[in-house]
Image (cartoon, rainbow, N blue to C red; front, side):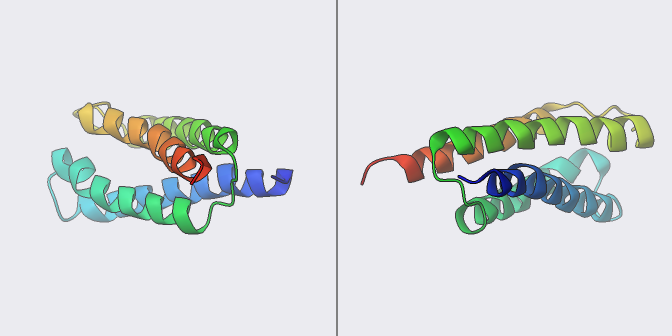
Length: 121
């Protein structure tokens, strides 16, 4: 896999997916109780993430998908901390089960898709 493709898949799509979730979370802030934002956001985010993995990510090997998974998770953790925990300082805290589930899915989904695609027919 060319280096440029891995950068786009890992960094480009990682930031884009995080930004999608962030913007959707801000919009949901006005529509649902704050304790429910993650639960409403998660199914939509999973579907969008799977769509990106299946149609836009060009990784060819399980190793490349694992790299994408680690980078996406690191992006999520760092940007959440900077732009939610530090900047917004949620009154009831941020790190709850839905956030840990989000981090786990961010790590597992690319690996699962990579494993499925890399498996012999």
